[in-house]
Image (cartoon, rainbow, N blue to C red; front, side, top):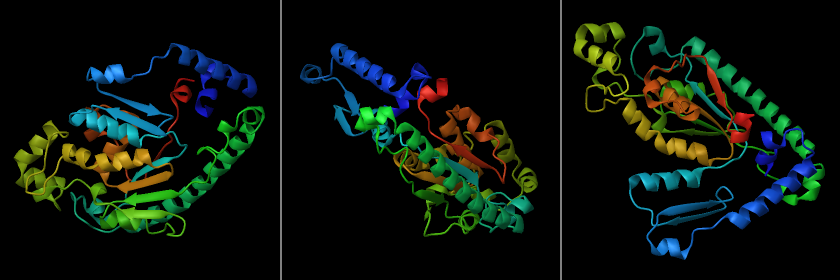
Length: 303
């Protein structure tokens, strides 16, 4: 209800009048809406019902991989107010040397970025909480007095803060300045950087000189290209292993900071921004840059 009342339909409306009008809309919907029932089930229809954004979920005759994935995604979905932060790890020694992959630690500049990152996130976390408190106090007027369903939602409540990093040294070290007492820090192998297989530890110049065919194949189609070797990966592989991370990111109602490599950051940003998959491999994500994405309702997007 809070999301709907903040949309363009009720812009500049008195909160009490807006709530009353929206309740009338719901009553009209109920008169016209014909719910799925036994008749539909007897005919073998496949459907899922999500009631109150996940309070109750009904799935009937769901078969096949795609349908199962859709149901799983919807069961993780929520409308809680929160922030999702995405960044690459701080500059590593391999970044300075221009090497592909590897597991080097942070450079002096990388450590400086890690310290600044923790300080900045703490500031923004406090600012977010203050903004939500002010907004919640503003909402506790006539509308909340008229209907208790607008009280105590997840938009105004205190938030935990998750910090998810890869298992790589550079990512773990980027999170070293976050206090364990204030942040829930987890190191996830799913966030590890794309594995370059036989080309790990080489520079672009060395790849071009000693593995020219691989250099050309990668240049032609970075999205589908897979690095040579038994452990070599491509963007398609990274996208698949990030599916569970994305589902968890959709499920949590708290703030999340994800720290990973270039390929991982590209895939996560492309997903959050709704980009085409062909844009993933060339998405610019420079070092030392922090991205914040805040889920909003469709009403906020169109207003």
